Amino acid sequence: MGDHSFNELFLTDARIPADCLLGEENKGWEIVRRTLAYERVGAPRYARAALVLDRLAAEVGASGRLADPGIQEQFGRARAACEAARVLVYRVIDERAKAKEPSPMAYQARAAMVQAERAVGDLALDVLGSEALVEGALGDAQFRNSLGAGIAAGSYEVQLNLISRLILELPKD
Image 1 (cartoon, rainbow, N blue to C red):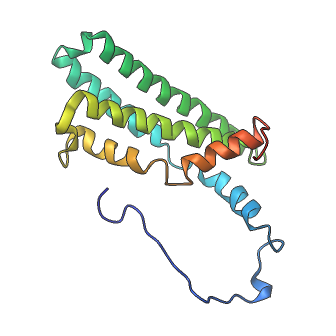
Image 2 (cartoon, rainbow, N blue to C red):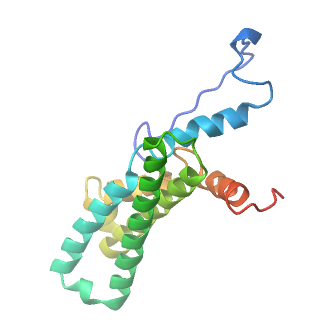
C-alpha cells in the first residue's frame, strides 16, 4: 500500500472531563455518522479513477486489444461505475448547496466511489497484467488506492449496512 496509507492511534486509560462530552452520553455513533456524512464525498475519487480509465483505454486501444468484446465489457462496467459515483456525488453536493441536512445519499455515493475505484483498479490489473503493479506505472496507484478504498472514509461494509437500514429500511439483524 505504500508508506503512511493507514495509521492507528491507541489511547489507554484516557480520561476526559464530563464537561467535554459532545452530545448525549452513549449517542456517540449518531454524532460520528452525522459528522462523517459531510466527509464521505469530500474527495471525488471517482474522477481520478475515470482519468486512469481514459488513459488505460488509450493504451489498450493503441495495442488493438480494445476491439476484444470481453475487454470492452470490462471498460463499460468500469465507466458505468465511475458515472454512477459521479451522479450520486453530485446529488449529495446539491443537498449541501441547498443547505439540506445530510441524508443517507452520502452513504450511497461513498459506496459507489468504492465500486468505481475497485472496477478501474481490477481493470488495470487485468489489461496490464503484472505491469500494473510496477511502482509508478499507470495502474499502480489506482490498484493500490482501490485496495484501501473500502477502508478509507468508513469501511465499505459499514456503508452497505447503513444503506440497508436507512434507505432500504431492512431490519438490523
